[in-house]
Image (cartoon, rainbow over all chains, first blue to last red; front, side, top):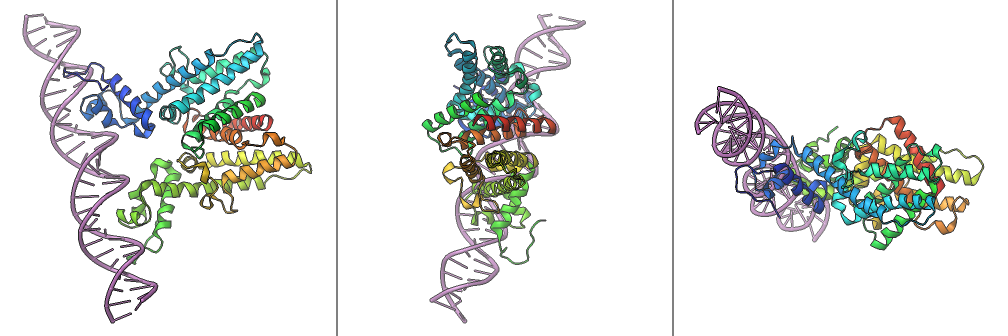
Length: 208
Length: 208
DNA sequence: CCCCCGATGTGTACGCTGTCCACAATGGCA
DNA sequence: TGCCATTGTGGACAGCGTACACATCGGGGG
């Protein structure tokens, strides 16, 4: 589990610290990412971390980027599972739903990582940098963006409403995720969340 | 600013601590609510707080409830500013927009309090308790809920879609708030936020 | 081949936090 | 009047992030 070592030099401490951070974030969200604990799990003195990260926030940023990559993977998975119906427009709409469904699936399956990924300060200006990408090379925002492009091509969304369409789409899905995970809607049962998800996706589908 | 005192007993320490907490939350969100600092600002020893709150979380909960009350006030203000057009349904829809606009106005005007109010664990089961109400006695969720009822009465929303309509409405607006305040959309200019708000409210109006 | 230097990890220390324990002052009620 | 529950104090502890000085390594130039 925890990286051991025999040499004085660790080998790849930076990666080990991020890995430890991910594990902590998984269990307790961003607040649970403790710098000292990460060094402990990497069998290294507390200060060693400062050779790789300016401060705790820098480590947390790296963990968040990794978590966004995992979210991207989950979204890609959901998108890939959409079976074509022959109707190009219906498919495009189904794919948009899938991005949202994947996002929310990640939120439910990995609430700690979800919160870490998406509630830590990051500028939009760098929402599509490589470190946030999943294994297919696309960051979450990028997946959504390209899906919306596809929807326009397929005639499922008037071109004049394409601009900034990411915002309402993302916001509604993200909002449900946050409300359900650690907001006032925390108590909802799985069934209720599933229903709520469908409800939100319906609204986006209809209202975008 | 800070409450002074001459007596051994403070008088209303509980309220003073909450007040101090609100001020800290205003400036730095939930993480900035420091128990010791609150006691310092109330000219009291650190442990005095434990006579009124079980732990830091309990203080934070009280602050969050107060912040929700302020959000409610902002929403009420926005709703009240809607001028009647004579068309009952148009008015009802405008009022729904106003609840969302008020919510987001609060998010932009008081980001720290907004985050404190709505990202701290609270069960939905107690989303409408009195301590979260604004000066008109309604909690944020309650305002939304009753506004939706009004929309149904006015014929602006089919009754069969009323159930759980709070979820998509709240989620989309809340999501935008979170994304804009400390999420990946943090960098947006005021104009962009205004535009995004309108875009989201349009979607809700159309898609609910 | 060796040595030396930059990169990496260690040790010690500081101030801050939340929280526990035993003790002190107060003031309202019997 | 005297007592006792309520409220506030003092001291202590572990854990956190982080700064500064020092130790150890490994690879490249002489």
